[in-house]
Length: 587
Image (cartoon, rainbow, N blue to C red):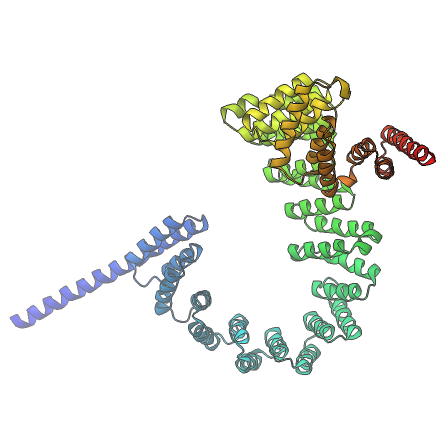
């Protein structure tokens, strides 16, 4: 009896213990699920460390929480830690081996890690568990075809078609496979058969591409047109027809389809840019159809008015076509969508500078400095340059020098050098050479070999002063500075011209001729001033015929640039040397 009692008591204790363990397990699972909810919230907020912390807590309460392992895998993928993602996905799959999302994500990881055999095995398993999930079949096809396993790709297409009938994945698989095998007839047959069962603009567009590649433009056009009957907005068919019309130089229809295609918001922006670049690269087409092309470009910006990349690119293209008002309107509109966006503001500033809209640039740069003070170190330069071009020299000088203390404090010698050089130029424009040279000297203290400053300094020292009034020390100083500029920047036509002219003024005609010829060789033959001065030297050397020839070239360039006073002066010189040459011949 006593023995029976002991056994009975043990059974009671065991039952109580089991009940306690069961209660503990339910409680732990509840805690684990609660932690998982917190982890998901952290993941949604992109808080990676908190997500991992809650997931690990969830697992500590319940080792079989597959969802926690899956969430840890997703975090690892965000952090580009593929090995960690794979390990956590394998844990999740070991707990729930029939979860589509676990398996498909694991397969994607295998593709990334180039473990192709494991990827194929995983996606094949998915097709067995989920025989109607087309994505798994498509992944298998994309693994087989690039590796030349065309028989296996066709086998996948057959398996899928047996499960769900004619479908796009199996049809396109056959099309891709036969195309790879260069079996055009089988590819055409596959598309036509599928289209007869399940009409689809995709099949018709692929047919159009096949015919186009085979040089059968009329059949290609027919296929693309049939696709557009089913779906008038089907972009691949629009693109196909556009390409055929462009190839055959039917530009009216080409532009019509280009305009429609560019207006598609869903289409790749880089492809749109490429099409515009191609059109603008053809000079004949560009000149004849500029306005129609501008209308097409406007469609890019209309497709998504808030797309800043499209707006900026469109504005640049339009400005190149001469449609600056439309371009500016587009950029003004994009500012409404992104108030305070520094990149867009700077693009508009650059645009205004490039189109030489000085009035607008001065106001816009000034208002932007107030709105975006961090851009002031760049914007004050634009403001000052716009004032300079508007001949508001005093305002421009004030604008540039307003930043002098700031730049000195930050030891920004490059910007200071630019400012002193520009301010010197402005004082020269005001005919205040004393102040001009003062700022040039400041610039040269920062960089004694700043070629542009040296050249201008030298030129202003000797220009606008009659030769007989030039002081020897000024000529010597100008010659030294000009020589340095030529040494620092050889091949610069304007620098060579300055040096050659100073040598002429000093009476060194042989060296002067040498450097004038270099100046002309480096592009100076497009500058009427250089040509005129070289002709002056030739006249001095009594090479009258050659002097008359270069005076004539200089006069034609001056006429081309609308410089009437210079034209008259050069013409007088030319007539004088021609008369002297005639008189000499008569003697």
